[in-house]
Amino acid sequence: MELLKSILGQQLYSIDILTISLLLASLSIGYIYIVSSHTRQKKANKYPPYAPGGMWQHIQISASSQYPWWILDVARDLHNRVFQLSLPMSPMAHKVVVGEVDTFRRVLTDPLSEKPMEFYQPFRDIVGGPPTVLTSNGHEWHGKRKAVAPAFSSNHIKRMTRVALETTEIWIRDTLVDPTKNASFDVGEEMIGITLSSISETAFEYKMSTQEKKIFGRELELTLIEFALKAPFNPLRALFSWFLPERGRAFAAAQNTKAMMFQIIKSYRNMKEPLNNGTIIQLVMESDAFLTDEERAAQLMEFLIAGHDTTAYTIAWILLELARNPNEQTKLRESLSQLDPEDWSRSEYLKKVVKEGMRLYPVVAGGSVRKIGRDIMTSRNELLPKGTICFLPFMLLFRNPDIFNDPDSFQPSRWETPTRDMLDAFNPFSLGKQNCVGQSLANAELFAIVARICSEFELSVESEGSVDFFLTLKPVGARLRARKV
Image (cartoon, rainbow, N blue to C red):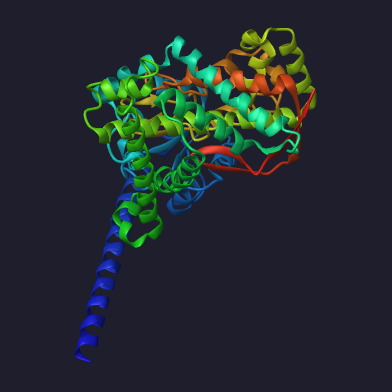
């Protein structure tokens, strides 16, 4: 009986400690929020308006699949594409969504703007801990970016695009041409398979097995949900990790994907000599910017994540929209038929189709995040004070009805005579010194794969599926049917 009382007492003591800790954390954040809100209300007319709802609602919506659509609704209701959020990160700093073109461009191109580590730090947990190109600033960022930039030279892009096309040819043969198949396919999943195989082989000199791709996809999803979607908007998750089983599972998943990167490093070291010079893995392995295998594995993981799903889902959205719009598909096929395959990238209609697909469905819909290093005024003369954390969602820019007529429709022809505002608003790879280092490769693969499929096959929609968002905007369960023409 005494032993039972002792055990129960210890349990109750643990519960009391947890309750007190949660209460103190909540009171601290509440106090800081009230003080900062009171200070701001004195000068409310100086700052952008707040989005409807309180802190808890903003945390929930920012970490949900509805975030891209919610910010569109808020901008419409407020008649303002710059507005504040109530989030617990950096309680004394303003958190502002910026979807106004001029302010968006000034934030990203200002040399004093930098990535807020309070937001990007959780991303390091995805790749195993060490800083990477995406999750660093200053000299550390510059050294890493400079080390890997040569991997995206024109010669390497041509080689990597060629491999992507070879992978696409195998997929066409096995999925679309095989008479035993019904030529119906899940467009999101199949494009993921193509781009994951391509980047693994060209960037890392490693051929992933089907099983490895399945494991990588499953474990990556768990880590992204926790560290890219939930943790950046709710710092309390890091404080109470022990009481969140899904967070523990995410750490385990991150270790599993990290182990895959170590396997890729081991395979590279076991090669007698590299098959190609100047690849991403060669540069990472030989550069002083990455001193340990932990750092090398983290950077390889980042490139694998960023280099396959963004490209894959962009291709998927473009193919889905072409299947929904057969007239646009016919125009594209006619344009391609007038050129030799090696010149398909010169097709003006292909350029319009790709640009419109990226505008309508920006895969990185949440865009970039920056902390500004000086005061910036919006076009409405509203103040973004130094230290403000700016969320810069592409969705808010690309579906602005004041810039794009009928913004929710797929209209490649809108790019025949684009306005200055349209050109200024369309920045799918971000702006400034910390823009996407792999944008040339992404563009080359988009043009090559979309052109190859549409040149030979007529696409139609078998199942619309649904739209999902966590870090990337993707079609789920959308199935297309292909008929050879």
